[in-house]
Every structure is written in C-alpha cells, then in structure tokens.
Amino acid sequence: MKKPYRRGIADHADRISQRKAAADSGVCRLERCAGRPRIEIGRAWTERHLMKQAPTFINHHGAEMINSYRRGHFVCLALLAVLTGPSVSAKTSAPPTTFKDCDYCSEMVVLPAGQYMMGATKDDFEGDFKKYQLELTVEGPPRSMRVKSFALGRFHVTRKQFAVFAKETGFNGKGCMTFKRTDWDFVSDADWQNPGFPQTDDDPVVCVSWNDVQQYIEWLNKKLAGKTVHRYRLPTQKEWEYAARAGTTTPTYWGSSRQEQCRYENARDETAKALGPDYPVAPCDDHFLWTSPVGSFLPNRWGLYDMLGNATQWMADCSENSGKLFAYLPPVPESKCRGHDLRGGSWASIPIGVRAANGTGSYTNLRNSAHGFRLAVDL
Picture (cartoon, helix red, strand yellow):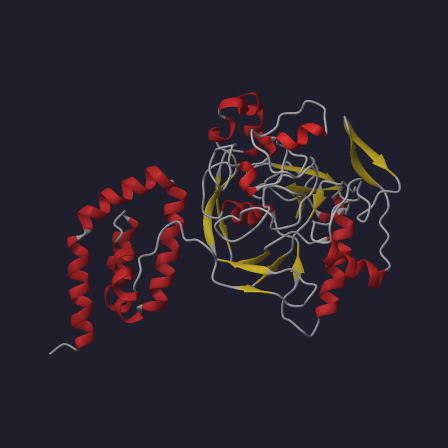
C-alpha cells in the first residue's frame, strides 16, 4: 500500500493533467499580454521554487513534469498552487528581502536571479520617438541575459549619506557641469554641496564623478570591514537594466504612457519648461524643477525608486565610446578606460531618455549636476 503522501501527490498530478488544455491557451494569452521573456522568467523561478518545496515529488516525477512544462504546459505553476498555496504569477512583484548594514548605509533590496531581454526594441521608438530610431542601432537588438541574485540600493545615495564620507575623509571635489538656462557649463566652484540648485539632505547626491564614487565605496567597505560580509560596488549595466525593468518588457516599467511618467519619475515635464530652452517635455507635471527627495514617486514592481529619473546613475562598466557598449560586447580593459557608463534618466532628461534601455556615458573624472549613483552588493 502506498504511503498517504504519495497517494496525495498522485491525486494532485491527476488534477493537473486535467488542466493541461486550459493551460495551453493560458500560455498563449499570457505571452500576448506579458511577453515571452517575462513568461520565461516566471517559469525559471517556479522551477527553482518547486525544487525547494517538493523535492520528493521531483525525485519521482520531476523530469517528465519539467520537460512538459518547458514545452509550454503550465504544469509547474499549477502544481505549485496545489502544493504551496497561492498561485505564482510571471509578474512576481516585490523581492522578499531588504537589509541595511548601518545608519548611513543604503537600504538594499535583494533581487532574484533571472533571465531577461536586454536592450531596446522598435517599441521604444514609436510615435513621437520615431525620429530617434537611429538609437536602435546602439541600444539594440535585444539580447537574452542571465543575472545572478544580487542586491541593489532601493534609492540613490543621498546627500546626507555622502556627507558622512565627506566629513570623515575631508573630501573636496570642486568643479562640476551645471545647467545654465540654455546649455551646460563647467563651473569651477560647483560641487556636491552646491550643484547650482537647492537640495535637501534626502535628495540624491550629484556633482560626483565616477572616481569620486570609487573613493566613497572604498571608504564604506573599509568602515564596514568586520561588521558585514557585504562588499559594496557599482552595478553593471546588465544588472541595472534587469532591476529597472523588474520583469517588464515595455520601454518603461509602468508601460508606454508618457502621461503616467510624473507618477513614477522626476524628469523633464511641464514644470521644466521654466528652465528653457524649448526642449521636449512629458505631458504631465511632477512639480520638481531640479532633483527631488528620493522616494518621492512610485517604485517599480521590485520596490526600487527613481530608476529612470531624478539623477542618472554611474555604472561599473567601462567603455571607450561614451558608454554606448552593452554588456554583451567585449569589455574595454580598465587600464585603458577614460569613460564609464551611465544609466537611467534624470531631472534634466527629455522623454526619450526616460527608458530602461537608454544609456549614455561620461569621462571618468567629470562631474555633472545630473549624475548620481546607487550601490550594489554581491550575494
């Protein structure tokens, strides 16, 4: 006589087999609505979760079930619903864990390992953006990317956090590119405390070069030595875009509507018309002319704020063509690096710059009042 546990599993399997036909049509509907990359991420997550939650069943039935699932049947998803409770969606939302290693440290969000399509598609350049289609040759075509689990700052590093470093080290980074009504200009006495506009302590620190950021990271890691196993660093482009998309495949994590931009990001909008000249703006009003306190807008699905606005973010990646190389191209040796990549938009970004696939770059030692950073940690 079979043990009750195995008889129960068999009953579950029978129920699942009765749902196969419905599952096939469900896959089609999900792929039309959510996109195949997002479905694949959901499948991979479910496989891993199922391996942890039902090892006995996998040992006896796993190969056949997983193979069927990969052919398009949502057997794993249905079984997980029966075994562990609520069903798992391909649109899995907030990551399960956050941590903060010290009072002046960034709050870090643990992101799951996964796979996604990195880069722009034709959808990024529809409507008013068709005139920018040449960018598709740089930002695309999309490539499938695998990302290991890592942690990313929920917010940009703020002025308050950076001030601890500056006070303890005597940091004095003078000279910054600032916006002067019609164009950008280098101001020799501008710095992170005086970027050319008013800020609060909770605004993202700007007017910091890539080299300045490395000094901050080195200081932070030394300060935390022996207190945590975490080593802080800048994210890579591959990691950053994965986090910015948070499982979505649209140009922005809230969809394609520019009217919605002001609910999620601080970038050029109706408010920015006061800056001049007549740059394109989003058809909405976020009520901030310059930077805004971090977390002032809605986050993406993974609980990350200001990923596409407020301050453009320095990346770990080095590239010789002002940051236009994607992570799947051969890297430039660090010894030859004169510039580093930047991702995300800023308070100064016109709408085409507020996209997950958008990237630029700058000289490693150049400061700009629209450039900031957030931290990453290996797990």
